[in-house]
Length: 105
Image (cartoon, rainbow, N blue to C red):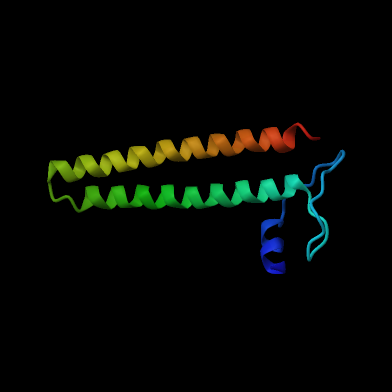
């Protein structure tokens, strides 16, 4: 349990003024902003990994299509969708960081 809490709270800035703290855990008190920042960063990194994998798969589909137009179109569609998803995830992560951390300082 202690390892999980340390992983989730690594490198996330604490709220400076009037920090709300969660109940005492194995590593001490943890603020709500710390937990939210860790969850946001964890989800963002996971989805970015999926987007990169989808982009690579789409590229491989195009390369291995052997001239079949339907495979080329599927690969192109997957690549475009992964770039759009990546832009949405990065934008949402930036917006959430601004709301939770930018306004608290």
